[in-house]
Length: 207
Image 1: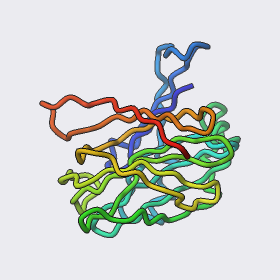
Image 2: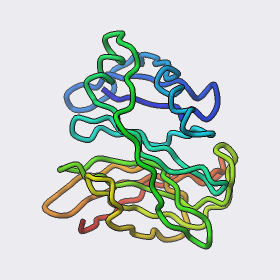
Image 3: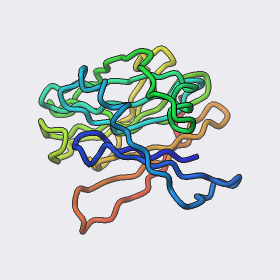
Image 4: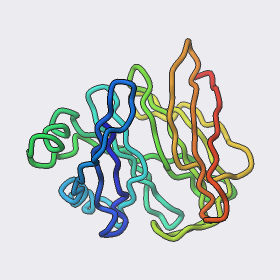
């Protein structure tokens, strides 16, 4: 199944959808709407401005990435046990409590903090992420992007490395495939301008 998530940054962004996939991975309509409020409301006790920008399944955990901003809002990785998440999505159970949370400092570009925009799981509990340095102090308003990176986290949440991406493009999505000690990543950009098409970027890293 494909689970899509709103960011929670506005009331209308507390909606998601479950879309069934067939064996080759093709979407099978219709999409089933999901009210994310029961999952997101407890997080507002920890974040003055909620902005969920990434989600992935890592082993037996469901992980959300909270995107910070230059106004001081933190980056964070929020972990849930996967089984209760599935029971909430498909069996009508109560929304699960978080298992644990980690805050992350990813560095700066030109004085602007790098903040999560997406993540993807790798074998062994490690995960890759994209982050951008966007000159804004608001979780909704866009700002100038002064740099983007793709990075690697350990299973314990330790930042292992970051690779700077060229051209200051705002990279907001990532998919990863582990192959013989290398990671093939696909990333998508968002120029915050309807006149400029998003781009699909591909790269291979030794991680």
